[in-house]
Length: 240
Image (cartoon, rainbow, N blue to C red; front, side):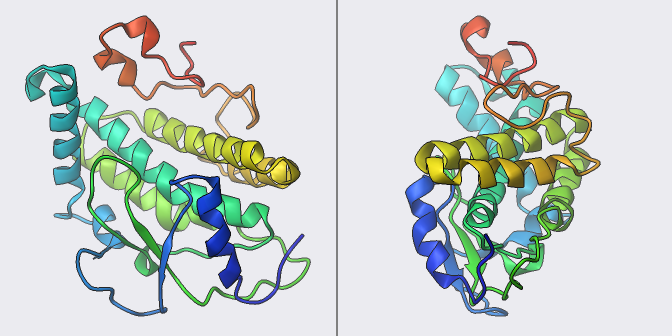
């Protein structure tokens, strides 16, 4: 199923899938006022990503009642990265499952630097038309948005790219699972979109295909700061 037209109505439906899917909108080429910020700054040198990783590190330490120095930078970086990529993958994946592709590019997106939940995200409207029968270029999301953010995370903190791309795989699978749970009628297209993303060279290294039984081939590292490490392992972790 592929819709034609701007697909404006799709944005009204995304929030029903959960807070990671809901988005705001702005006219193409517009510069929304603060607190909106251009998302491209997260992938650039001297941008706010380093500060956000530090803020997440401090928040994790406070939550666990320990000094920030006890939280490894790579753990904070991984959790920061996972939260951001999950936020950026969820809306376009859900939209594609309904037959509409949000053709997102890094320079077109705006965000708000807020901790404590999914960051506010704004996408350009109207959306580009999709020709009937033409499959959306879902892999563009990885090359245009996710890859630059992942590369910048690696530049800032010494962390394995395998961990970061495992985060991406986990975000793709988790988004598809949420769509399938909320809208069983969209289960097949949601998993099909996830499979298209997994066909990317970056994600094709995953040993398991997307689906309810997916297990990523790496660990996001959050278990290392859990009070009880045996209970800090995520449902799709390679350690499970």
